[in-house]
Structures are given as C-alpha cells and as structure tokens.
Length: 243
Image (cartoon, rainbow, N blue to C red):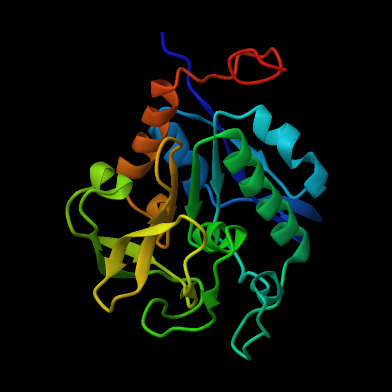
C-alpha cells in the first residue's frame, strides 16, 4: 500500500476559546482543511504558531505544506502603511508562516497557499498586496462565489482546466508579483486568483477556499506531486529517511 503523505497545515492560535465547560487558549483550524487533505489521500498535521527558527526542522519532517486562510498580512512585510480597512495583525502567525514558506521553498517541499496563504507566498518572494478590493467578500463569516478562469499551460490549469465557480471570502489581493511567480488563474474582474512557481517543485497559491467545496482537484494534484517524488515520512527523522 502506498504511504499516505504527511501534510502540515498552519493554524490559528486564539485566546480563551469556549467549548463545553472549558474556556482555554486553543490552536484552531476549520475542519474543512484536514478533511480536504484526508479526502485527497494525505495525513493532516496541524502546525500552530511556533518560533520561526523551528520552521526548517518542522518542514523537514513533512511531505507537503498548506498555509491556511486567516487574517490580513501585516503591511510592514511588504513595505506599506496600513490601509484603514486592513485588519489587525497577527504577528506571531505572520512570522511563523513566512518562515514555513521560506523553509518549504528552500527544501523543495510541495506547498499550497490558500487565501491568506497565497498572499503570504507572494510577500515571502518580495511581492506586494492590494489592501482592499470590493466584490470578493460579503458579510463576515460567510462565503460568496464567483468564477475563475485558469491560464492555459500552468500547473493550476493542469490540475483544473475548466472555468469553475469557487467559494471565496477575501478583501485583499496580489498586487506586484513576487520573484519568479506567475499568475495561473483570474477572476472575471481581472483579479489574480492563483499564482505559481515554475517546476520542478510543486508550489501554488490560490485565493479561494477549496476546503469549502467538494473540489479535490488541487489537493489531489499536491498529493500526486508528492507521490511522484517518492517522498514519504517514514518516522526516521525526515523525508526518505534523511535526518
């Protein structure tokens, strides 16, 4: 039986969360993220914020990495002043996830950025963000849908070649692309909805939320890229038994 690849997913860290009789600090992740990984054939591991210096060792024990959605990236990371509509920063999460992304890129670990994760991928590679756009989010806590069109010949188009409607909730977007990134899907209003790096490593950022749909195409592509590299976590300290 083919080993199920171990895929880490970044998480929220929230103070004083209530469940049952308890009110405690918690590491949180919407269940759609691990379910997406599991349904596509992977093992899901939550990665709550940690010291950035531990990112490289963490990534070395993974077969793939997902940077989940969440709050706005603090504009200081791309040399901008905060727009009045930009949300409050989560500095611990920014630092941790940027370190995870840089470690994954350095180690050649397949990487998927979702919503905030796509924006962080762009920022990690020197790109910038537009701090507010209209039409891609409705009321807080709800998703809207719009169509996205793949760019032919891209990694994303190979995984999902048709124009589709996707669940979305974001008010920021990619502005200047980071080093070596190219757009691989657009919304009907021209907003960049997916970005990617050229081969050999599977690296993709998407602006929408596949964990809120039944579309497994992107996660299956990620899992397939891992299996194509014969990478697996075997319990000995790293991918393919490397320390």
